[in-house]
Length: 171
Image 1: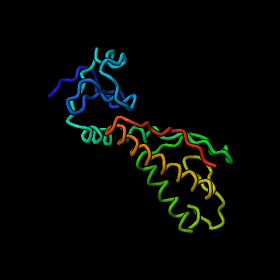
Image 2: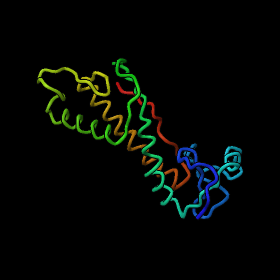
Image 3: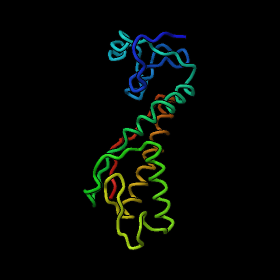
Image 4: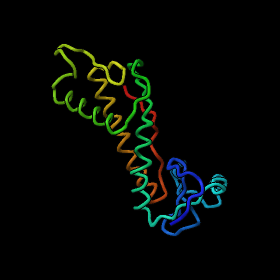
């Protein structure tokens, strides 16, 4: 087993994939970089590059360790029609489940969460949402979560593509 010199940080780590030492996968840049990259070479002064069997294994590591940190960092929301919604929202598993359940309830015609059938808005993450605003928000979150995972898979597998922006805009 390789000995790590520096403290492992999945947000800033490098991997040789499948024995290819001409390039490394950078979790900080979310892309493959040449092993001659200046940032990588500086990083190696205090760290040892991890060898990983193949892109599938790398994606598994990133899925278990890197993606949850990206979701916990959340998204920055801009609402064109309702600026009061602008802000940062976490997307950790609990937040995603909450967003999904509220959106499903609204879409199913069961109304807004909370007491009272005449409510016009409800509070989520300290912000007052109408049902229409929340459904727009939930759809944008769904798309971001899906795209982050799919785009990361493409980058790891093919070395092409880029990650979606964590800044999202809704009507």
